[in-house]
Image (cartoon, rainbow, N blue to C red; front, side, top):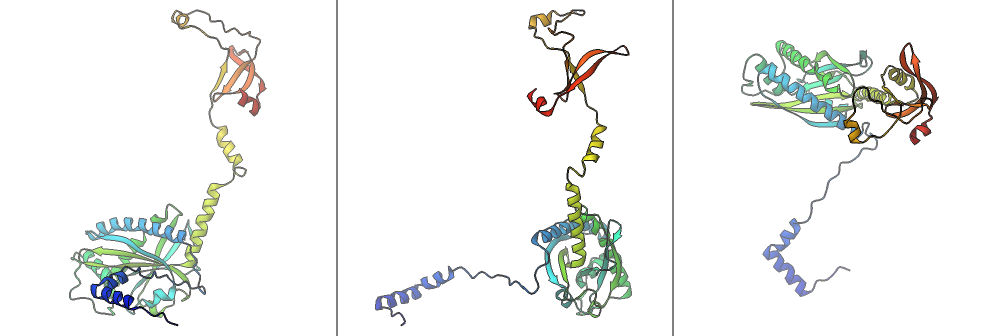
Amino acid sequence: MAEVLSQSQIDALLNAARSGDMAASQKEEAPEKKYRKYDFYSPRKFTKDRLKMLSSVFENYTRIINSRINGLLHTTCEISVESVEEQRYYEFSNALSDGDVLMLVDSFMEGADISSDESPALVHFSTALILNMMDRLLGGEGDSGDGIPPGYTFTTMELKLYEDIVRDFIGVLGGSWENYVELDFTCRRVETNPTLVQLIGLDETVIIVGISMKFPNASGLMSVCLPGTMLTNIFARIMAMNQVGRGSGENNSEEIMGILQDSELEITAELGRTELTLQDIYYLNVGDVIDLGQSTKVPIQLYVGGQPWFNGKLGTQNNNMAVKIGETYHVRRREEK
């Protein structure tokens, strides 16, 4: 049975509605938090740590190409990494139009081609952005005239300029990976109609890196599509290099010992100890003899790095003072000394 309000409750609600208190209380309610739906049929292939690594790599890349743009186009440009997202290739492909142009990029890791049997990386510039860069490269101010019509088709000369600009950018992409692995990227060819060519499997996992570029009179997006197979091999190599770098003491013991054997250490022989007053030290002269209070037959101590390692007997060899080692101290005995 529904709850029945009393007359006093009804009057209170009417007064609150007239005064606006009811609207204010409704506004104070926190909005419902929205969560992104997770597709269990297509689980994520790369962890957040991997995405953060890629974000760091391409942030370094933006700093590199920023200086390249300043030198190539003689203008200032604001560049930043806008997004690093894991998607399926069809999501990237569906966003392309018939007039878009892609640059196919192969990757080489430490001299070995890792892309011969794999899908290439793809680089795409928004049409307005790349035309602005072409105009500046030819000495213009980057003006696009009355605007760019939808489905704009690049001319042969514009495609050549497009290729030259992108090759210059891709040539320095490997330098942004130098903190993790040695990589080189080279341009394979320009694809003028990517919607009709299946460059990557539609359901293949890819990472889309969006780089925002802002010129004084134009802005646009540079998109880099990295295939999952390429990134899997790169991350596997990075992990293998890290494991080799850590290594184990047993595997590297011979190499470490070989390096240590060439090191030079100072060995000190302690002939004896005594105590003198400051007055006695003050009046010492050349030729004075200090009694150490120790017999010549008592073994002397040999110190390595300030720690006692051996004892021995004092003598001569080839008219030089020498010590004949008599005993090697064990570790426990060294600690007691």
